[in-house]
Length: 383
Image (cartoon, rainbow, N blue to C red; front, side, top):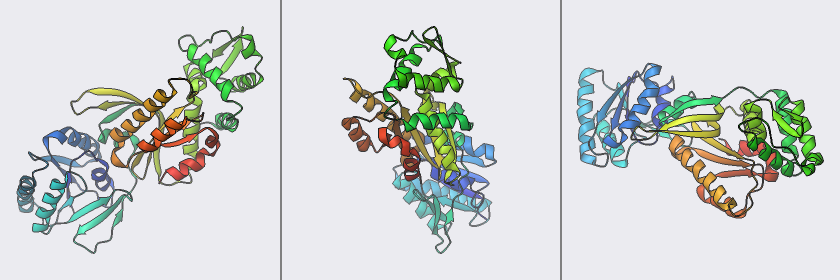
């Protein structure tokens, strides 16, 4: 039985976590081979492993790029381990670290004829490199969003996970089905809701707005759902949650509800949340607040979704689109590593230059006329 994993600490936390949390491969102890610049990441990994009953120890190296020094330090570790425990009770997870770390540790383990495995980044499969001939292990999807984020240096300070009621889903489907016809009226509602942020009461609607039949039809549906009241020419919102919904939060709810429905047909989806507030810790220990519209974990890979209902026109449209894309791309990289994915969902069509920027960054887009096919888009995007 393998009692201990030696893990090579790097920016990619997931390949070190999944074998340690799968009952088929879980150790009782993890030793973290860590360079000075990765010390904080080692602490993040330990913060996930220790509450699950796995003992953690760090084995420091001075330079992650010094092959000889890495190899010597791993040999020193193995001399200690082999003297203390039964042979073959420690295995190397060769997935993380720098190339010199991986090579140096691999050579040391080969010298002692000890087990070595690698985690396939796309298939989330443990592959035995030594001894050869052992069957690979498809790792279990046991990670949850909160633990995944902790391992990447972030803490969930808030988030919604409760299912969307059927009546609300029907309202969302109605709004999405009229993606073209509702666009102008929803833009007006967005503005009215934004102006009501402090008081929950909108500015007085002008005669043109009061005579807009499409706008009035949407207000009637919102009133029927218990979200707003129309009184004295103004919209009165039934609480901050209702105002947020009308101010564009409905699109976030629609994406979340669609993912919830897909979860029953796509076993790879293991966890999801919306309106996620988190505090991301920097390498220097500083806390940086961030917000995520919808976050999904599937096959131990993070999927982040940004939802926008704004109109992409005017001189600032390109800059606003670029800002949204860069923010999404940066958060995806920081919170999920190389295997994480990003999606921008927009109620309105995106300008060509914003679409090009999204393609350059590798951010998938579902916008405008594609929105009614969101379920198919998500199915194609997820593993």
